[in-house]
Image 1: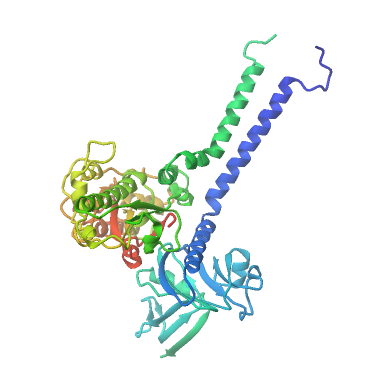
Image 2: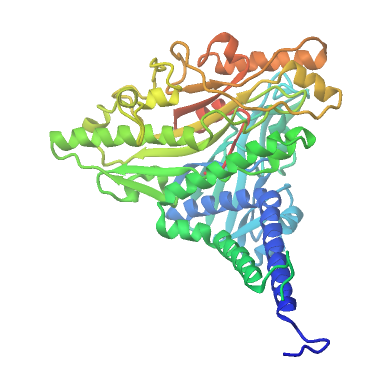
Length: 204
Length: 334
C-alpha cells in the first residue's frame, strides 16, 4: 500500500487515541482533586442541611423534637420568610433555611445553600443566653454589660450541635441552645455576626 | 519493517487498552463496590483510604505537612439499629436519618434472650474494633499537632452509633456486658481477643467500663476515635525559626497502664516524641504536653501521656459529653 503525504497512518491514529485518553485522565484527575480540596465545606454544609430538613419533614405539625447534628466550622444557619425584606434570591417566593459561610443574605445568595420550606414563618435563632454579670462575655471581652441576648442565627463549629425544632401548621422554629462546651472566644466572635433578635442589656 | 526499539501497533493498542481499562475501573470502582460489597465495608474502606491519604500528606515536606489538613476524611458514621422488629423505625434515635443498618434480635425465651445479649455485645465490640482498624490502629498521625501557639486539643471521628430499639426489653439490656465480651471473645479472623488486639497484645488489663457496666446500657452509644498529639519542643523551635521539617508523626501502640477512672472503653497508643529545651515555643510545647497528659493520663503512664495518644472509646450519644471529649473538633460525616 502506498501512503500519500497527509494520510493518517495507524501510528497517527494511535497517537491521537493515546493523547485523548491521557487528556481525559488528566481532566478526570483534576476534577477529583478539585472535588477533594475545594468543596469539602460545601459538602458538609449540604449534609447538615439535608439532615436538618429530613428531620423537619419527619415531624408532623404540632410536634417538636431536639436533634444532634454535626456543625460545619465557621458557617451559620439562617432562616428567611416572606416578612424579611432582605433575603437570598435563591429562596424565590418561599420561606427557606440556609447554611452560609457568613451571616448575611448576600453570603447565602453567593456561597450558601438554601432549602425552601412551605411555612409562612421561619425563625432560626440561638436561644437567649445570659451575658456574664461581671461584664466578661465568655471571659474574654471586657464589656460592662449584663442582660439577655437573643441572636437571629445559629453559628456552627465542627462539633455536635443540639438543634430544637418546633413545627406548627404555618410556622417553623429552629433554635439552638448555647452549648458551654463550644469554644467560647470563637463562639462569641461568630455570634456577634448574627443579627439581633432581641436584646435586654444594661451598660454599666 | 520494524526497527529495534520501535513499538509495534499491537503493543500500542495493548497499552491504550490498559490505560482505558484502568480509567474505567477507577470510574466505576465505587459502583462495583456498591453492587457486590457490603455498604459498611465500602464506607470503612473509603474512610481508611482517606486516613492513609491524610497521614501520607502529613509526611510530605511541604509547608511542614500542613497541607494534609486540606485532605478531607471521607468517614461516614455507621448507624446500627438493634431491634426486635428488624425495622429501622424501631430506633427512634435515628428518626429522619438514612442508611441505617438494622440488626434483628429475638427475645421470646431464655435462649433467645442470651443470644440477643450476645448480638448487642458483638455489635458494640465490632464497632470499636472496626473504628480502631479504620483509623489506622493509632499508628498514623491524622490530625497533626496544631499551629505553634495553639494548645493541642483532641480531634475526633465518630465511627459509628449503635442504638437499641425501643422494643428491646430490660431483660436483654440489663445483661449486656460489652467489656466482658471483649475480654473473652476473639476478633473475627484473628486468634486474639478484642482486648489483646486493641491493646497490642501486651496487656490484658482493660479500663473500667463505667457506661458499659451490665444494667447501665443507655439507648445509644457513639464509638469515637480521638487523637491528641503534643508538640515536641524541638519541633516548636523549628517552626518558630521558619523551618518546615516535619518529624514523622508515626505512633506505636503501647500497653494501657492501669485502669481508667473517667472514661469507659479506652484503648490508647502513645506518639513518638522527644523533648527539647528553652524559649517561648518550647514553653508552649511544654504546655501542650501538660494538656496531652491531662487528656491521655488516664489511659497511659505519665511519661507516655505527655506525648499524646490515640483513643477509641464508647460514649453515650450526648452532644455535651462528646464535645467535651473532642474539644479540637469532629471530622467526618455524621
